[in-house]
Amino acid sequence: QVQLQESGPGLVKPSGTLSLTCAVSGGSISSSNWWSWIRQPPGKGLEWIGEIYHSGSTNYNPSLKSRVTISVDKSKNQFSLKLSSVTAADTAVYYCARSTVTTYRGMYYFDYWGQGTLVTVSS
Amino acid sequence: EIVLTQSPGTLSLSPGERATLSCRASQSVSSSYLAWYQQKPGQAPRLLIYGASSRATGIPDRFSGSGSGTDFTLTISRLEPEDFAVYYCQQYGSSPQWTFGQGTKVEIK
Image 1 (cartoon, rainbow over the protein chains, first blue to last red):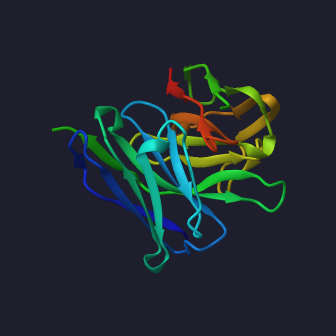
Image 2: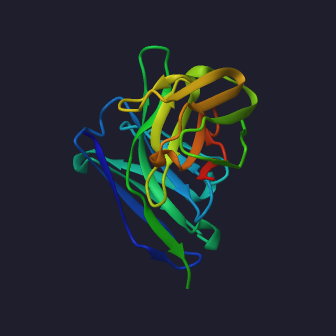
């Protein structure tokens, strides 16, 4: 059973950089899956931030692309998120998740999620 | 960017009733790229349906998905107490690769 666990500071100052790590257990980050960060502001919906493959290839949401960096550390079986120049609007629960593509019909979905970690942007 | 619009925003029903949730895309979406999730307070979303109509592992058969093109539906045939939650549709596309609907809350009437 794959498990994902987010970690990082729960409080970040405005204009600072938010940094989170997602540790993967029960499976390899070098599998044929992409690994994503998704966030959810309090009381609101889900926003996809970006994803990474174990090769280091990335895709980012254009709305955040200028501020986001996602990296992977295969030796530690984890991947990380950095979001720069944060404001109060970046306050959210941040989830890491694994996406899967089936060989049959090429179906795409997120099958494993971390529990989420709340990051508050405040001075 | 493909925008997913879910309706209604809130559905007030009683246990045992049928729930019908809609997800409409701003342009055609391959059914292979459409999934549904359930989220309860304080929890991460849980995959219910993928490929528009395939139930994920362990999901009861009272949950079903249908649709194609721009119109997709999640149906809960008989609501159980544990089904009251928020439901999101999601699609895979290009730039951004993943988008979600704004959610439908199913609440106890």
